[in-house]
Figure 1 (spheres, rainbow, N blue to C red):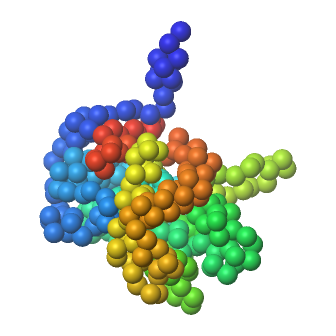
Figure 2: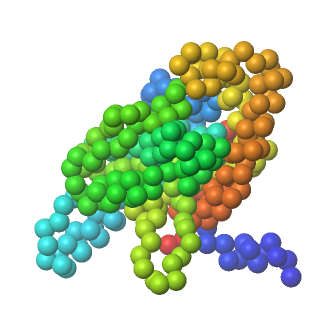
Figure 3: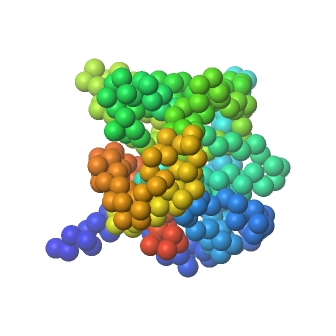
Length: 318
């Protein structure tokens, strides 16, 4: 028996080539300018008008159907229960490896969804702000596992999402600085009852060990209505990570305030060696143990090739 054929037969996803997916845009209008798109991509990522037209506009169209259906169900449930409940935001999770382009995808989706009529309120939060402060990570011996599930203040993140889903206002999220590589003390951003909230982070689809007593164990993804996993092969991710490190060495790392300023004077060979060491010792371990295993939990998987262009799209069957 052909195992691959069996896997395809029982695949819970519908798989689309880039051309097949692009055709699903239909008459969805382009609401972003080339200048706006140019400001959205990360330093090493690729994003142009064609990528938005062929990948993100069809996704925006699909999401419009999902959001409308969720709103109808919410109204029907409210009538069934005979209650006057608060508005319930639609929450979209964006997951994937370090250096895969999650931030770019999240920003594009936020911009497109905010242009729907009648202009919904769309907010974006990254889970970096919910990392434990460095002093806590150092005390617990977790600095080398920053970005791993255990490095996050999970109760605070779950409380935040619970308050958002309950329609409470406003809800405060902590802010993270990539320059200082730490949570900024006493700073936060207020999220005030958005229509749509995008939550971006490497481990947002992470689960945990199930309890033997059957008690409820909430996961971050329990609060998601839709989730996107940005995917790429490991050698490609490694190459992107090294490229990003070299770029940061010549830019952000030169700032004396940067946590990584000690790498600013490294030669190309030294910087590449250091980046590969960080990738192999930390990020690859996190990818293999915690991030990649959550890929099958996503509603939609966007698979990138080496040129950062999305090649295939997988959508979970209803």
